[in-house]
Each structure stands twice: as structure tokens, then as C-alpha cells.
Image 1 (cartoon, helix red, strand yellow):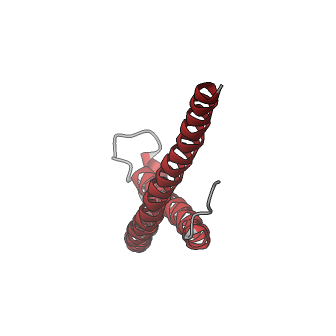
Image 2 (cartoon, one colour):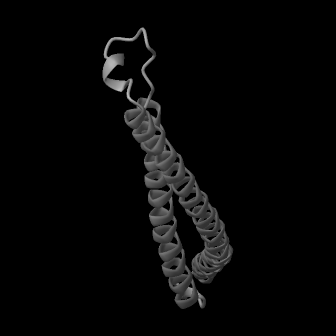
Length: 150
């Protein structure tokens, strides 16, 4: 006779909590990856904003002071953008780390109840086997007694 695990309801609730924590972790990791890509893209764009040297082909187009000022302002703006994106990346990483910690805690709470469930199942199985063995022993004893009575 299989008995229900008395903590089944709690186990279901903790599994739902773990699933929510896992979904939050996935969103946080996605946010971190997006922030990493944004920082990398901005750095790549900044690298492309160079000053042509006087001997470089096309240097005559960049020789005016206004052009140099535009490039310098563009590089400064890009550097500011990278700084802001790096701050956003730090924030996204912090959120992802916190989400990972919360998921780990939720997983641990589920694991504790699962272990209790496994112990319960083993105990029920042992009791069922003992009851079955008792029935078999009684049947064997009856057969033995029936043979003696004949």
C-alpha cells in the first residue's frame, strides 16, 4: 500500500519557486550578454575612429582643424558611451550574480525536500516488502500446517 509523501504540496511549491528563480536567472544572463555585446561594439566603433597620419592616404581630407575637432569630439562621446555601457554591464552582472545565488538557494530548498521524499519512498517500499514477506510467510506456514494435519 503506497502512502503519499506528506510534503508533496511543499515540494511542488518549492519547485515552482525554483523554476521562477531559473527564469529570472536566464533573463539576467541574457541582459548581461547583451550588455557585454554593447560594450564590445562601442569599443570596436571607438577603435575605428582614428586620426589619419599626414603620410596616410586620405590624410588631406582630415587635415583641417574642424575635421580634427569633429573626430576628437566623436572619440570623446564614444568614450563616454563606453563608460556608461560599462556601468550598465556592471549592473547587469550584479543582477545576474544575485539571480544565480537566488536560484542556487531555491535549488537547495528543493533538493532538501526531494531527499526527504526519497527517504519516504524507501521507507514505504521497505514496509511494503515487509508486509508482503509477512503474507508469504503466513501462507507458507499455513501450507506447512495443512500438510501436518493430513
